[in-house]
Image 1 (cartoon, helix red, strand yellow):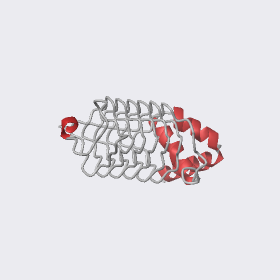
Image 2 (cartoon, rainbow, N blue to C red; image 1 turned 180 degrees about the vertical axis):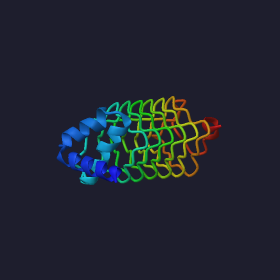
Image 3 (cartoon, one colour; image 1 turned 60 degrees about the vertical axis):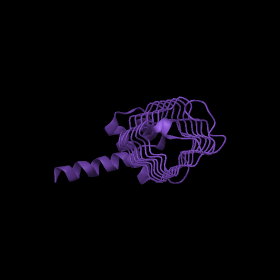
Image 4 (cartoon, rainbow, N blue to C red; image 1 turned 90 degrees about the vertical axis):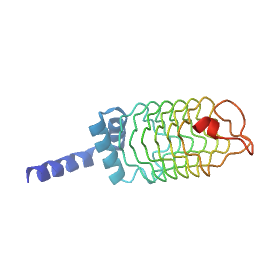
Length: 195
């Protein structure tokens, strides 16, 4: 009974918080308060209506956040801790994810065209069928990442670590720059990067 009452009171308090206050909590709060702020923003449908385009969440601590199908183009998650998060089918086109920790994150079918993931940690990230067309992945840690069927056309992977990554059926083109700085070409043995 007490837990229910506390939940009702918190819900009523959150309803009075402004969008900007909730975004500030999401960006600067500890993981628990940041996740609570995100949940309230989700209840208000801000992640679905496109009104959060370009928001600044750099350095946010949002481990295990659930943002499936969120519309967040141009968002700045630089330096954020998003490990274990779920972004399935989200729109993160042109997002800034520099040095962001996405270890064990689920980015299945996420749109990351022209996103900047320089130095991002994507160890064991599930990125099957993700769109990374034109993305910057310089120095990214993609060890054991699942990039099955991912669109890597025009992506810059210079200095990226792909050891153990699954790149089966991933799409590359002549504009894709591989970890050693070489342009992708038909017949290139990708095992030299993934083994």
